[in-house]
Image 1 (cartoon, helix red, strand yellow):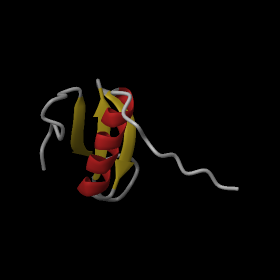
Image 2 (cartoon, one colour):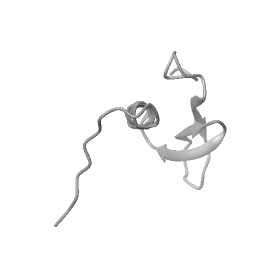
Image 3 (cartoon, one colour):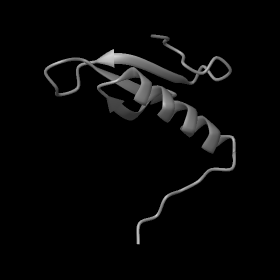
Image 4 (cartoon, one colour):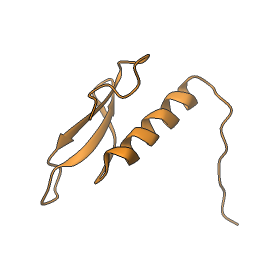
Length: 66
């Protein structure tokens, strides 16, 4: 597990924290602000990459339900 999952952007961090569940969860933060929590590191990592891409104005796909 890497503290800074995106090597080019140290503002993102993933740490294990207790946040109301019986076991510690992986918490994604941007500049110290909570973004999301997950039971799995990989989920937090994918979200960090997506958030970084969005902030860098990369072309993203958004799913809308009918």
